[in-house]
Image 1 (cartoon, rainbow, N blue to C red):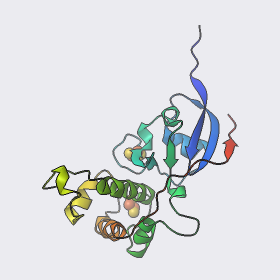
Image 2 (spheres, rainbow, N blue to C red; image 1 turned 90 degrees about the horizontal axis):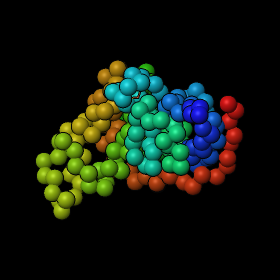
Image 3 (cartoon, helix red, strand yellow; image 1 turned 135 degrees about the horizontal axis):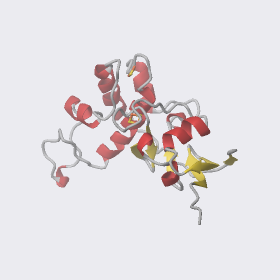
Image 4 (tube, protein in one colour; image 1 turned 45 degrees about the vertical axis):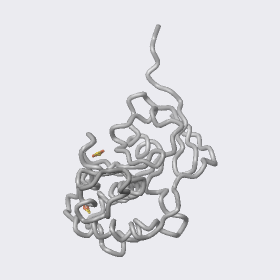
Length: 192
Ligand code: FES
Ligand code: FES
């Protein structure tokens, strides 16, 4: 009996539903960029090492080049196209803009999505390799430069805009942000 290598899946992205047939080997990154025209998410290394493809899946940062699209079915996916609230930029986006947290901008969507996820991890009390006192009762450590650098170390920047990126993340950490995940609404059918 022939085994099917493709399926019709429904992805929940930025509050919308997209139904499309995919080969089971299609990564979430390729589904976003090549099938759904959501090209804000960038492809750098395509092997999980640069962070350019970072999106949020159920609010957690994920390198979309290492996740199969079919495995993301039913999860809430947020890409850079979905982090602003209408014309109101997300505090992390605004901080990157205000503090020049980029040069060419290629890594920036991944940096911003990663920073949003990282600030959630920090608020939840997750320690990092730079955290000196990891006892849960101590609570989240101060977001020092070392903490931010360590927590953002999965996102590379070929332009080496790291100093400004760290400043932007520190600025954004001071600004409360609304939760990003909304219930999906419209359904969009995609052609094979
Ligand atoms: S493109 Fe996914 S980590 Fe580099
Ligand atoms: S701003 Fe150019 S790669 Fe980061």
